Length: 157
Image (spheres, rainbow, N blue to C red):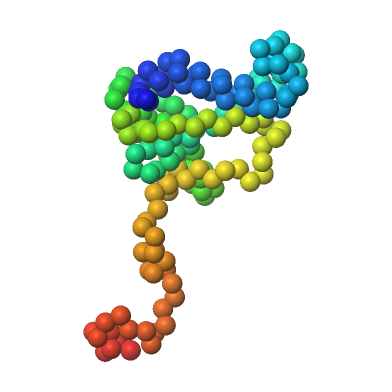
């Protein structure tokens, strides 16, 4: 499925957002028949307050939470403001541009503001790609000054 300009700014994104909200509301009101739920005033009030988070996954393994889409005339890439995962970076704004062809999956997470978990799922955002396993661990571990990596290190101790 191509997540192209038409997907983001046409009916498909709205359909997925609406479906995520509908399913969240139905889960909250399990006694309602899905085909009649829209007519229930409590269902409608709950549905109307639902918030939707959009998580975008790229071919290179990065993932982003879309804070706000930026409409522009270019139809080969998507520009959006990213919601940083790290609280320290939320004082600024990250604007990201990605080619539509690099988008491999999109997730919509609907939640009512009164039912948000305290521990929200961590969306890696611009920090989504991780170094190969082991490499960072080896660089980060404390080294014993008596430990030698090579014969050249002997002179430094």
